[in-house]
Amino acid sequence: MLPAVRVTPLAYESLGVRGMCTLLETKEVGILADAGVAMGPRFRLMPHPIEYKARAKAREKIEAAARTAKVTTISHYHNDHHTPNFEDPVWLGSTPENAERIYRNKIILAKDFRSKINVAQRRRGWLFSQSVEEIAKEFEIADGQTYTYGRSTVQFWSPVPHGESDSELGWVIPFSIESKGEKVLYAPDVQGPVVEETLQLILKEKPDTLIIGGPPTYLQGFKVGDEFINAARHNMKRIAEKIPIFVVDHHLLRDPMWSKFLDPIREVAAKAGNKVITAAELLGENPAPLEGERKKLYESEVPSKEFLKWAKLPKEKQKSVPPPL
Image (cartoon, rainbow, N blue to C red; front, top):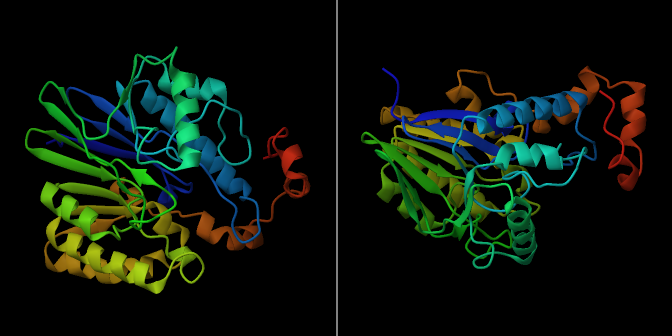
């Protein structure tokens, strides 16, 4: 028997790229959540060619999903959570044409770019709204709003912190989709959650499946303190006790030790008859978090001379020359 809400991860760290793009489908509506993908600098190395190929594959999957989805959502305006309408061959793999194929004729349910937002995202959100004005079917501010599509209900939260309460990274709007008594909660970039209020909101929802962005343990001791990570771990254990399917991915899987971090949380879930998995595992695949393995990739599969030459180009030059794969 098919689930009432079908969940298909498209772009996640466990699938080799940065992002949390997910296709959520019920009988009445298809929702493409956070239709973006990105890569980032790591270990003073440019992304490996294998990572660029994973990004290209993710872009193809996102565009294919956009052809079937009626609605797209934007939880916040970081570039791995939406597709901007400019060309970036280095980090995003985005083009104006790519953005148009994703957002044309869509109902876009997006975070408010005027309140509960930092300066960079306010500008980015305004630019995005202008870019889709002529191509989207609708562009709506979704903060705290509820939408009904037949027997499916989509409910957006008011903004919650992107990580800590005083985070400079701003706020995000999670949402739930419910159909025939089955509920999926999509909560990107809450980083655990680390905030108690966000945890309580999650537990109050009582979803059958929770999709969440885990804590950025790869930044521990640099941008993130032990107290942050310990709070996230504690809160994740509390979730694992209560929610049947707990999908953890994104920032956490940039850490080569991500699986070790999840082990005690998985143990708690197993005792309660629940499970904690990555987005890749939800698809029945083995996790392939390429960014955290970038050093090993460069050692085991040495890139071509042409690629290594490109990787040493000045940043401005790289923007005009796609990586030779």
